[in-house]
Length: 284
Ligand SMILES: C[S@@+](CC[C@H](N)C(=O)[O-])C[C@H]1O[C@@H](n2cnc3c(N)ncnc32)[C@H](O)[C@@H]1O
Image (cartoon, rainbow, N blue to C red; front, side, top):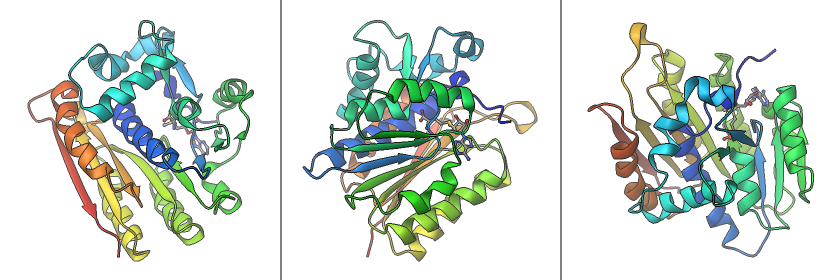
């Protein structure tokens, strides 16, 4: 049984980075008339109460979305993301945080498809209830890594794959690389977003290099954004930041993140060593 529950972490600095990127990618996809599919291989519960015991116990959102809430001077892409969270809260106070399926449900058009995978029975049940009414939505309680053969390429040949595991198992690191390779073989033009944690762990440290190698072997363009916010805890434990690796990114994403990342460092940084990294490789 998996122990990870995203409710402990909802709205933290890592969710902010991942979801700013997701909102921008979905906006780009929705700019063309033709429908697209979002496959969310590790979907979570869909949305989270920030007033639950889970969220209160760690209060991680206080170092994440709460630091952006109410800010008036954000770059447009960051303001857009905060507006999505505000919509999820019905325009009221910050009490709920939208996970990736909820952001997608807000941004996808009626003909766009949303296919979610979530292994935890409780989170699966919450997500299935949340998306139950939405047309063109499927929620499966099965392994998201194993879903690619079924999902790719999507019927409309336009699609986004979000790979966002908990990395609770060290084998997730190798599975992410294999999933990226498989995704690009099955659907070479798809946009793939991979999130990963910055940890003092060899598998985590090596992951960006392995993702770049996989994208380059498939001769695809990629973008890599990292946000480092905190020093390692005692004994080297704890997440110090996170990164997002995007293959076949929207061409505007690099410039957008160039505006967003310095603001995230300034607002979400927890010590003087906070910093960002942004790199890209153009396709052939
Ligand atoms: C980081 S959370 C997902 C957060 C979500 N994507 C978001 O942005 O709101 C990772 C989720 O993956 C689930 N999970 C773990 N292994 C899985 C697998 N092999 N297939 C599908 N879901 C899995 C966990 O139960 C957890 O809810």
